[in-house]
Amino acid sequence: MRGDYEELVDEVSALVGAPATLEDRDFRLIAFGAHDSDDGAMDPVRTRSILTRRSTAEVRSWFERFGIARATGPVRIPAAPDAGVVRGRICLPVRHRGIVHGYVWLLDDSAAGPDPDPRLVAAMEVCDRIGDRLAAESRAGADVGRELRAALTASPGQRREAARDALSAALGPDADEVHALVCVLGWTAPPAPAGTGGSDTADGADDGSAELPGIRSIPGAAALCRVPAHGPPGPGPVPAAEPLAVLVRLRSAQHLSPARTAAARLLETSTAPGAVAGIGDPARGLDGLSEAWRQATAAARAARAQPRLAPVADWSGLGPYRMLSALPGGTAPDPAVLPLLEPSHRELARTAEVYLDCAGQAGRTAAALAIHRQTLYYRLSRIEQLTGLDLDEGEDRLLLHMALKAARL
Figure 1: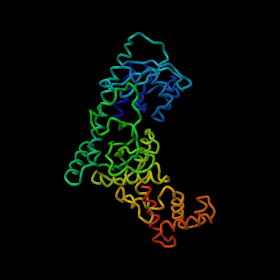
Figure 2: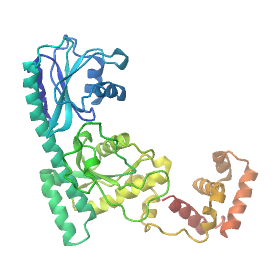
Figure 3: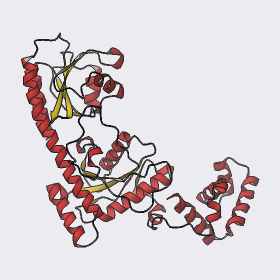
Figure 4: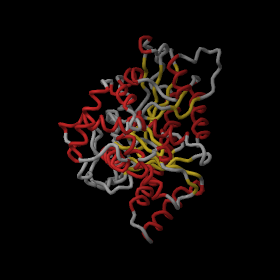
């Protein structure tokens, strides 16, 4: 598919006699045309776009002030050295049914030619073909996302099997490959650029697909959707938005890098502070999809609860949170530990957790908390008084430790 876009971009370059690049509506690179390295085509913006596959916020702001999101024809943009744009450009908006899906950029320092310029008229016809392809790809991604959503929310039994079969059919041969599920908690969509016309992928659907980033912008992603959350929202600054599910293709079950890259890319695009992600164990095929989603969700909850696991946590690296995450949502804290969880005793709760994390070693605990040992001993005595637990007893320590960790979830 990428080769198709490169051929179309090369066609535009040939028509206008200038180097061209194709970016999506969020200024992420899709394809770029070949050029002669001696022709001065590589200005800093174009170089960065090709090497990092995206443009900076400053460059995007400079281009958008010329109304490219609303334009239906070529837009000439002058150079802006302060923004790193050392050469002028012509922007050809890529639209489908009035909705912008991307932009073709031409490096062009020449003065305006005839109006209309027949070369640009011909190039816009190619852009219309590009828009048709991008729109079809976007619709296909939305369809697969809806099938993934259905597969993750279907009740056990024949309904779940039917949903899984429908997802398999939507994915085609990719359904039998190795995948990992990523869960993102607290992801909030950035606002769409003004004048882009919205999305033509949702068609009134209520699954939130209109706000989701395009599959193309997430490396390795096979499907993307919102999944209704079950149970009460977790504590903390993360908004109680529906979790985001991403099905990511892997080269093998031993290499989670594509899943981590996909998670990181989504966290970069979220406008909400504190968004986190979790990754379930990889598996071949779709039979273990429900279990993989449970693991990914648990890993994301653990990343939200434990800063050292954030911002992206793997199920295999959760330690005790693998067991704690199996507790039903909204489980009340153990009565013995409940007094310690009151806001007025927050410092004592932290002291207890650090003490138990340090295996009960007073010296390490005092150093970690930056307090005197006598202060630590006083706090430990107060903890025992509040909870009725004996910190010299292994089972009491275990109960307190697990209860404090569970309270984070």
